[in-house]
Each structure stands twice: as structure tokens, then as C-alpha cells.
Image 1 (cartoon, one colour):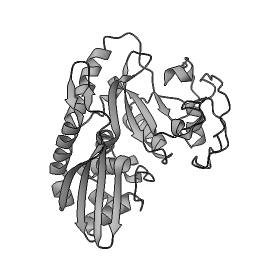
Image 2: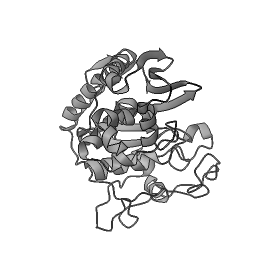
Image 3: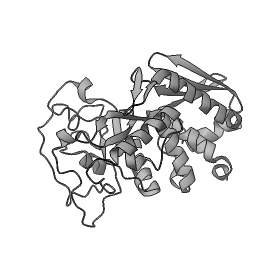
Image 4: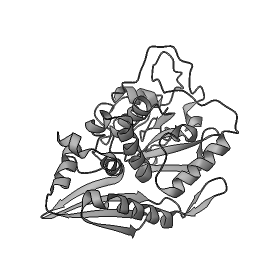
Length: 312
């Protein structure tokens, strides 16, 4: 009953923001939701469009504040700090909104440990889409440099390296819940990020869930400058040759492998126990080891026949 009463479109959007970049902070009687919108570069560029990223992130966060102010019923601040813009909602005590959010998030408190709420997974398409738009607004990026072999562009969702569950869940939500194909997941793992380099800082980066711009149109962004760049890339990409791949099927019988060398950090303590000490030659092997449920037996043409190092 609590889920049915509380999970509307605004709440689903807020949950997406929180899961990908948020924290629930409790200090005595002070309760806060803090959501960070990273600003990676001074300028966000499309084909012809250019935006002052920090300025437009601040405008976007202000619009989100206006949208969610009635839902949260509390003081909301938008602040700039360092390389991000922060959305801060402060509550006096553990009110019903706070308790419901904690319930939906399973008691977790940080984007490093959040998972996609079961209520979202089990909801209808509108709720799932709003959740993914929240994820995209706070954790989604689209740049000309993130393209496939110098051609079609991709949106990528960044997930903190400590969280090895959310990428699998977002992929499932996109593919099974919304019919949006995921090209691949770039894992922050020594076998998939600079496999020949032993420096942890080189491979211990964020995970990236990558989706072609044309496919991501089903989700889109509410933050205006991101949506404008997405639309510009989609129109440009439609003129390029090449078919977009179908839904990802991590079936070993229909995928090709390019053997990779052993890496000295395959047993690093920062890796989850389910994959620690194992060697992987491709991202989809990690997906399967982490519990991906999208492996199907139906024959399918090989999606990515080019060496993994060239693809990513």
C-alpha cells in the first residue's frame, strides 16, 4: 500500500536522481537529500550547439527544484561546488516523505550502494521512463567523442565504481522494461579498462552503460541542453551508414572473444567477491558473472565483431 500511494511520476524521477548521484544524510535531527550533477567540461558541445555546462546544469537543477518542491514540501537549495552543481533538500526530522524514500530505497544511503527499487522494476512503462530520465539527468552524458568507431554517438550513464549492481539493473530496465537496446557496459575492471596497464587509477574508474543516441530517444533528458544535444546528434547520426544493433544478448555461443592478457589486479580487494580472482576477455562475461538474466538461446548475429579494445 505504501508503494502504491507514494510511487507517482515525480517520485519515480526523484528516485532516478537519487540512485545514480544521491545521498540520504542523517545527522542528529538534520535529514538531507543531496544530489550532485557533475560538470565534466566548461563547454558541452553538440554538432553546432555549444553550452556553458555549469550554467545550464544550474538552470536544470533549479527547474528540478521547482518540479519537486511540492512533492518534498521542504526547503530546497541549489549550490555550485567544485566540479558539480548540488541539489539539497533538507528535512526537519524523519517525516513521511523521508521515511517513504528510505523504504523505497531499501534502507541504503548512498549512490555507492543504491539499487534500482523493486517498485520501479515492477511498475508500468511511464514510471520506468521517469526513473530513467532522473538517472539520465544526473548521471547521463552525451559527447561527440563518445561514438562508435568514429561514427554514431552514444549516451553513457556513469555509475560509481563501487556499485557493481546498478549497471546490470539499468541494462535490464532499459532493455526489458523500455525496449531500449544497450550497446555495452564498460566496466571499471582491470580486464576491460586499459588491460595492459597495472595502475589501479587507470582501470578503477566509473562504469558506463552505453546506448546509441538514436535508441536513447525513447528516454531522453529533462535537462534542456542535454536534450538539445541528443536531438542534434540523432539527426546527424541518421545520415550515417550502419545499422544499430538489437538488444544485447550475452550468450557465449553467439559472441566472439578477443583474448586479453592476464592482469596483476584481477584479485584486487576493491572488486566484488563474485568476480574477484577471475579473468575476463569481454564485458558480457562480467555481466553474466554478476547475474545478468538477459542471456537467451535464440540465434543472433554477433553484435560487436571488432576487438574489444577498439570498441571502447
